[in-house]
Length: 410
Image (cartoon, rainbow, N blue to C red; front, side, top):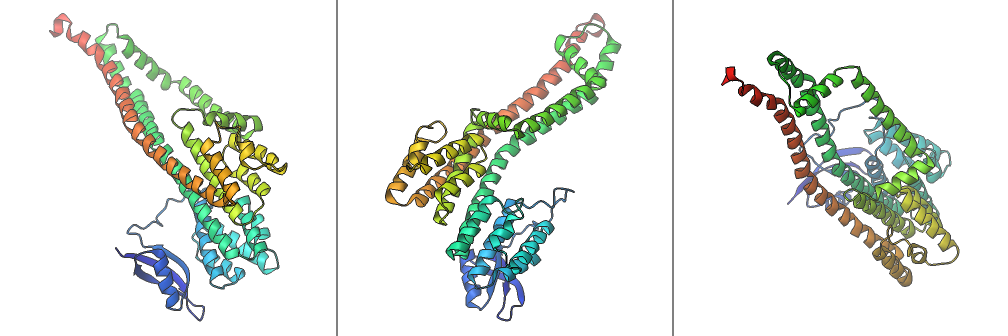
């Protein structure tokens, strides 16, 4: 089935040309454009929905997302491979990106490179956009003379990381949305509906059942000064918790705890392993030394427990031991399958390929875990929401049964 692709290319005179072209896949469209004498800049599937309609939030809309950097890296690799200079490529990219902050950074990097700075050194000045992994791989490509290949590898790595992050966010979004709806429904009932019943019960008189009285007491407290005190305590606790996990001891404790819960623990664990193996494979295939690669993987793992094990393995490698040996004593964090694959890779001289296979395995495991998690949480949260609303409704109508038993109402 043919797909319509939107493209931006440069013709033989260097003029920018935009248009649409049908093809079975993106590589075939790129090949056809090159056969037509064009230099492809960007080729993207045409969407039936206008994806550029976004809500701009002050202070957040200028942030540069990992996916945006991955797209720019992919396009930069294509242009460098086509023979364009890095300076000219960066200028073209700066003129076509939608994110104003990213365009500004690309222009600054272009000026630094134009004045004689290496691309990696220019990118290091913008750590919020280009992380340590990006700069290290670019430097390896500059040293090895294969910058276009390294940029392609880097683009693949960043696209996988962005996809992994999106998968995790999708797993967390559903329960968060359901819980938010539950809080809104319960708050509306407590604030607006329960007081109406309270006035009715007060008019009718009599002693209220315990569940009804509890709801009325909660409603009275929510609409009083105590609600402000409780809300302030919750906000203060959240702020204190966020500050605590930024400390060294807090981060270590929190990351260790994240691996323990029966539902989300395995998900966070597999995500960390997928990040580590995919990144380590990319670094080693690009010629980055193993010690420096382990340092970088420790930083991007997203979990201090996993990162500390990698740093410990780094010291073992520094002493001349194979990488699999220092990892073997941490079966609870580093599974034996991963250790065995690394050992085979070291013995066959294809460690980067083996790590990539492990990364693909854990990517699939993450996707399966998210699917199972969604299938488990969806009915569970629906039942909890229904039960909560049901309990509140029953509690409000319980006194009615007593009033119906009164002699004057029979």
